[in-house]
Image (cartoon, rainbow, N blue to C red; front, side):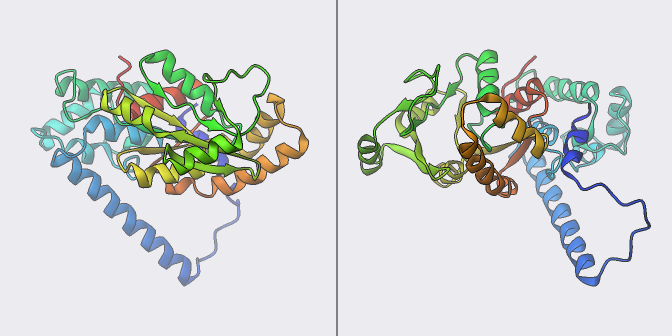
Amino acid sequence: MPFVAKLTRWQTPLSKQPSPIPPAVDSAAGTMAALRARRGRAEVKSAVREGWRSPLDVLAVASADASSFEASLRVPDFLSCLKGLGAGKVASTLDNLTISDRKRLGFLGRRQRHALRQFLAQRAGNGDPHRTLVPIVLAGPSGVGKGTVASGVRAHRPDTFVSISVTTRSPRPGEIDGEHYFFVSETDFDRMVADSELLEWALVHGEHRYGTPRTPVDRAISEGKPVLLEIDVQGAMSVKQAMPEMRLVFLLPPSWDALVDRLASRGTEDEAQQKRRLATAGHELALADQFDVRVVNDDVSDAVHFVLELMGISQE
């Protein structure tokens, strides 16, 4: 199923009746939104022309997040930003890739996206010097599948550093200290906060505290490893303030009902805990637009693919 179809599940079905003329305030809001979109696309194109952003990275964001400025770029406009591609070469390139000149970057078919990515990689000499590894913060509500996606990334790139959080909650059945979490007492957690040992920390679901140890993250980045921090939404905001180079990725469920089903089916919380987590999820989902990229976890393999691309990791 095309990725754009996944996003439409969050939208309210359109009425079959003719739409009324929108009030002036709605028209003004629409005009402002269109202006922001044009400015956003202009900034993306300028960054590509000036070499500040890799074409492969722009394609990665466009493919992962259909609501992004990158996704709304028309493919000919995107290609025209590349050095040495005039109007004639853009037209022949589109013909060779069998991509319509009306297509937008985030709405390509799987084969078209793969063909475009190969074209961009070949232009970069099979290694884009400007597309360095990007450290990722992966966040989203409980039950959305952050751990599964992180495991998929590690399966593809075993050298990826995936953060292990500290928490004051007790281990669930099957969880291993130092592998799934570092389980610590309230006193030990207080000491880590006081000694600035945590990159971020937060009280989650009003029950337990979670945090990310700072030293392992700094070490992994300095060693040039791929970095993925799997943390909660509150913590992601704090990390962005402390480390602006981090790319915030919000993992969305395909629908609210799917999230409810996933929480219920995993059987790790009682009914009261599930209700608390769903209440928290509602607040967290409202913050998705504050993240750099939004990825729908409808198909795990697709989600893993998109996250790897956003990290700058080739899968060829």
